[in-house]
Image (cartoon, rainbow, N blue to C red; front, side):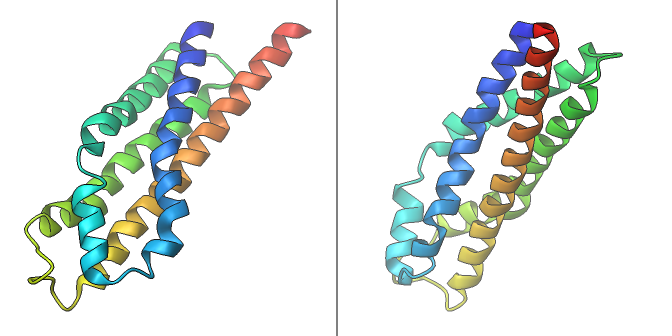
Length: 154
């Protein structure tokens, strides 16, 4: 069980990297002109889903496994919180980001709609929310792991 907790904690850290990167980019991306923003969206982020989506799903199922295997464990609620956070991240991807990704994949600089900034805001909001949930999940898992370590030291 200790090994599983450590593996899930490492995965939890990896899951935070993408939404935090998007969050750090947000102020600059909000200043970009439409054609440049579109080009970045269509080229820079191509393929990220194939790499990072499985990690998010793995984090959710890893946390769920910890929850299911930890009956009577004082950290059980942390595993449930992490599982809910990862499930919410995946849900937000489909509510915010996937729709925008599919929509703008058909655009060109010449066909960029006048309301493209609304799409940008929706995309950025989705990633900002997933950053928040990824940090909450990481924090509760880290706290549980640290408490487990301090309890075994006594």
